[in-house]
Length: 55
Ligand code: SF4
Ligand code: SF4
Image 1 (tube, rainbow, N blue to C red):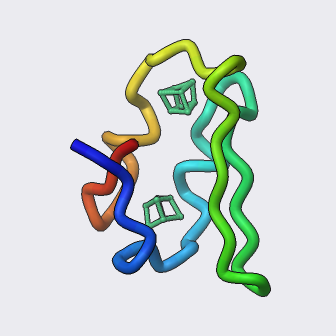
Image 2 (image 1 turned 135 degrees about the vertical axis):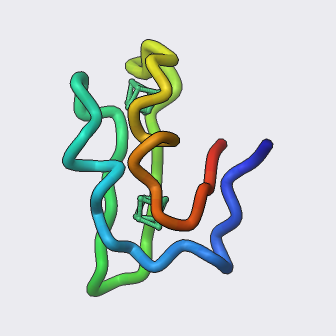
């Protein structure tokens, strides 16, 4: 699976659910980023994403 930037609606649910704040979403700039050094692979963001996007 991989994150699909074209399908992301920048709803920020993944950002809000991440326990370690690894994801940064900007609705205004249509930007999505993840810090893989911080991510603990809990997959909570995947479960929350309405578009079923992952990285
Ligand atoms: S897998 Fe967990 S730690 Fe990693 S970005 Fe998603 S919610 Fe955050
Ligand atoms: S939850 Fe999914 S659609 Fe929403 S901002 Fe995150 S990756 Fe994009």
